[in-house]
Length: 354
Image 1 (cartoon, rainbow, N blue to C red):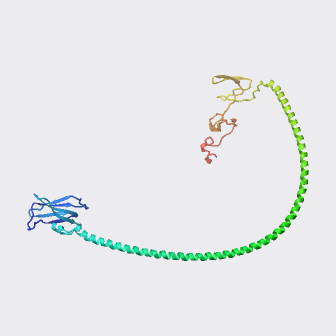
Image 2: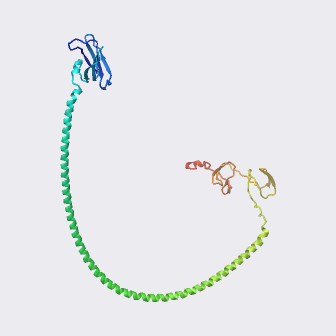
Image 3: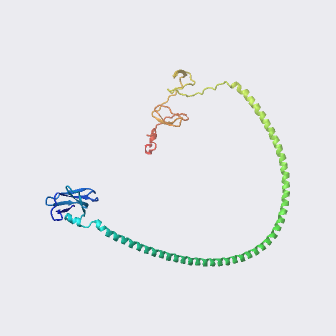
């Protein structure tokens, strides 16, 4: 909200100033005013003026026609400022008037804070030294305690070493007696081993004679096997010659056709066979004569599935034969009661195969 500044502009003799313009130039930004903007007021003939001034700081100048501008001073309008004359605001203390004293006090406070910080730093350093000394004392006490413990351990180790030495001496004495007894046993064992070695040498000599005899027999068996192989080879040659002589007359003989041979054409008629009568059928551009009483008739009232020679599941239509992987499927007369047997995609639904 603006503050009203009003009054009568007078000179030093108390007379109203006429033809004068009061100019307010903003010195800084505020919530409602932008710096360097200018507002003006023209008093009436009696020098009376009235302005609603926004919060902020302004430079006041008086402009009289025919004379250069005259700087009257600086005013500051606060949110809590009371309405008054221009003289009241020009005579009030500004921030620039108060700042030096406040700055002096602030510098004093900074110096006092610095002295207090220095004293605190010295106290902290002294406390740190005391703490370091206490830690050194504790370390020295700990070292003494450790040395005492090490001495006790060394004494215990010496005692243990003495006991171990005594035990080792007793063990050496025992080992010496055992070695003496073992020496006697070794002498007896050596004697027995010598006797056993002599006996084994005799046995080895006997085995060597037997092995020589077996080798002689093996040589004889080898000669007999070579003779038998030679005889078998000669017999094979004779058999091969006889087979050639026998096979030559039969080389051009064609085996007869079977009684029933069923290669089919598109109309399911047999292409060849034996029969008293014959008929002619046309396959493509060829005309073939075939037996008349050996026509295969094929009937099936429903579709059926089968696996072809490529291993694929196929569906045969009504009256279409099923040529499976192993040949033509010969079907007996039967009735299919399985409702979805021709729908492989429904085989996983068990309730449909009942």
